[in-house]
Length: 471
Image 1 (tube, rainbow, N blue to C red):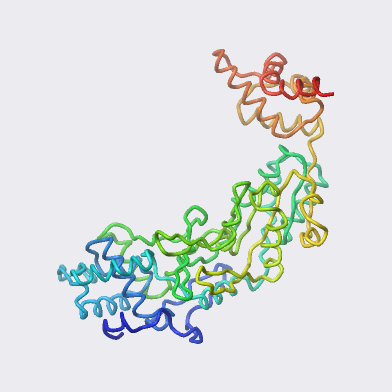
Image 2 (spheres, one colour):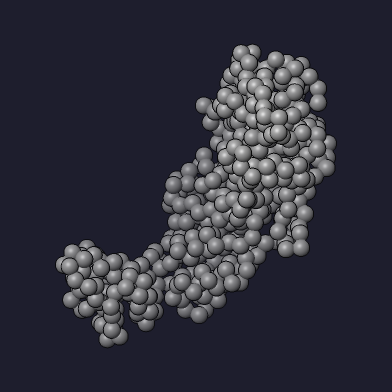
């Protein structure tokens, strides 16, 4: 392992040419990616002893006292490696053990000495990251490339489940099925309020399969946080923070660290949806001057899944700039990220891009860019008969009583009130107002001509008035 002198003399990372013995993810018989083998030595982590010991110091700084098995669980490293790190810190008088019950393996509690507290504060001033040990860029490349050997295509049943929630023309449904099934870049366009966002957000939420995501990356002395609980849904049994002390699951978790590289997290295949809030800074590494480490951009967090750009053309980033930023990496399957220190990171880009817009695609980008989006599917507004079915489903969902003849009358009333501009969203809007009015009047909600007429006046009168006053 070495002595604490390494804290002052070691470089930030092991030579990139070193091949980590267990970095390549393999597929098991169930086509589920398994974890890489746990690194057996500090050298196999790809990180220097100095970096790892500083990470332990920072954890002890925040925890005040911690057992070795808890530190092991938080670091995602085997108990033996953590014991070596703690032994080196003790030898350098940076931490001390506070004793342990004789029968409890890994039960020694550790705390910082005054010298260790000062060293921890120095380390935090340089980088505030105190989570699981990161993986190197080379290790990340090996695992992600292993996951993406074959182009991922969503199962037909996932797409069919999504499409069944909409009322669509057979041809439109077929085109959407083919576009989503292809696993290639696609744009869904058409008037607003007809299910584009519902379609793609539902599709993104119900992706099947799992991928491995590292807690963090390490490159050129910098930490890039990758795992994001707002994006990733972990399917691991054990959380990185560990269960309560003395719990049987804690012992199982620590034992697993001896076999699997728990610097990685198994998550559901990510489906990320962004809308008009997307800004230029969201496309690059986000450096926090307060914590002194980076957040990965959204498209890196969506690795192995899909990234949906909703309301395309209404972002704070010009459409051409957004396409230029992502379409070329999508074709190359490589992306380039730049640290604030100027170093450039070449990373895999294995995800699918999906766009939805109610704007004219021709107005958003020139032919060269549109050509790079192979699938472009138009979602038209519903016909009166389709709208009737949408209205029927909305009534069933909201438990609103309706008769066949009143459905026909309601469709005609909404058609008139909207100046012939039916939209699928109008069905839910009108039905929800019918329910609200019924609650206000203390009666059961029923889709009567009077109830629909009142709801149309409350919701659509501005549209009608604009039509009658326009020149």
